[in-house]
Length: 151
Image (cartoon, rainbow, N blue to C red; front, side):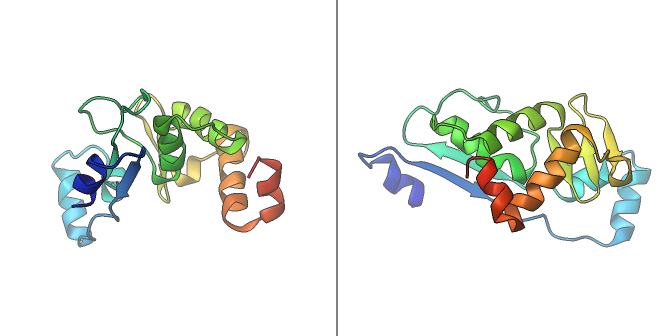
């Protein structure tokens, strides 16, 4: 009903709908998935579906087409801004650069652009991922650092 309403709206509208983490399963289920060759249980366990819709042609993004993108929820703001054709601040520009090298991160680890999974213990404290950690903290808790990044 929401999408139908905005399909007819005169003003431009973008809707981003995200799900929550998939339901938790017993560890036995994940163990069986590992034994059956499921590639990355840690990454799959925290998959969050989303839909990005607009009542106008959204700017082209890497997520055009029918393929479901592989992305972390922390990047969705940047994707929404890009798709809607809105100007990006320095924080969103950083997220875009980070997403290119590390398309998905979660509390267990991260994927590199080549699809290789790394456990959280392997995450470096320097470089892009170190900056990501610092900025995620600042974005959540540190108002002074936020202002330095154009927020």
